[in-house]
Image (cartoon, rainbow, N blue to C red):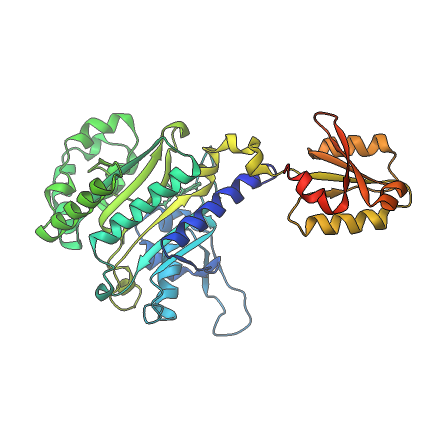
Length: 416
Ligand code: AMP
C-alpha cells in the first residue's frame, strides 16, 4: 500500500474511530496469531475458513510446553476479541463495546477485492444478558451506527440486507428440512453444493453457480423455522430501524458462513464493486462465549472489508482535504539552512505541513522541488528576510508574491 492511497486508508480509519467513539466503543488490539484451536472452535471446523483457508504452522519454540503447538494467523477478529473478553473478564469491567482495526489472513484465490492479507474494521457488543446485550435494541444500534459510518464516509449507494438465522433449535430443524429437500436434487448441483449438502447444508445458500439457482430457489427458508422468541426479536430490530430511518431489504437467503451466528445476520453491499460487492458482514453470536469456555455473553458484531471500502472511495485519493499536501515549501538561500530550520519548526508547531529545502539548491531547483511536492506556497529564506524578519511568500499557482512578517506567516499561509 502506497501513498496517495494510504491517505484514503487513514481517512477511513479516522472517521471510523470518530463514529465508534460517538457510540462509546473503545479500541482493542488482539494478537495477529493465536492458537489454532481458538479459530477452529470459534469460527467452526466445517467453515471454508477453517477447512481450507487458514495459515497454520507448528511452533518451533524450545520450551517443551509450547513445542509443537499449532498456531494460526487470525482469519477474522471476533474469536480473538471474545477470547480476550473471557480471559480478562472484560464483562466485569464494563467493557462491552470494542472495536479492532487490522490485517486478517485467508488463503483464498486472489482476485479484485479478495486478498490473502486484507484489512478489517471490526466492532463487537458483548456482555451478560443482564446488561442488555441480547436486546434487539443492540442489533438496531449497531446497524444504525454502520449506516452513519457509511454516510460520513460519503458512500451513498449501500444496501443493507437483513435476515434472522434463528437459534440452534430452529437451525437444527431447518438443516433437517434442507437435507431432506436437497437429497433428491443434490446430484444435479455443483461439487461444492454436493459437499455442503452433507456437511453444512445451510451453506448451499452461498452458492453463486448460475445453474444451481433454480434449485436453490425451491429450498425451504430459515424464516419458516423461527420460534416465537426469534420471530419477536427480529420484528423488534426491524421496527427500530424503520423508526430511526435506516432502510433495509429482507433477504432470507442470507445465512453467513460462520457457525456461531444466531438470530440477526446482515450484510451491506455496494453497487459499484462488481462480483465482490459485500463491503461488510456481521450478526449476532449469542453462544460463542460459551463455545469458547466462557460465561454466557450474548454478542453482536460486524467486520468491514477495509480494502473494499477504500476501493469504493478511490476518488478521495485526489481530494485535497484527504491528501493534505504541504502548505509551504521553505527554500533557504546559500548558508541559510539553520534559519530555515528554525522557521520550519515554528510553522510546523502551528500545525502547518512544511517541506524543507536545502541551501545547496539554486532558486530554480527549489521552485521545481516545491511544485513536485504540490505545496501551495514557497517561502524564501535569505539574509534580507532574516534582517527584516519578514519573508517572501509566493503562491505557486497564481505567482503572486508578498512579503509577510514572521508573526503573521502561519495565518497568511492558512489563507486567513
Ligand atoms: P467475513 O469475515 O467473511 O464475514 O467478511 C467480512 C468482510 O470482509 C466482507 O464483507 C469483505 O468485505 C471482507 N473480506 C472477507 N474476505 C476478504 C478477502 N479475502 N479480501 C478482501 N476482503 C475480504
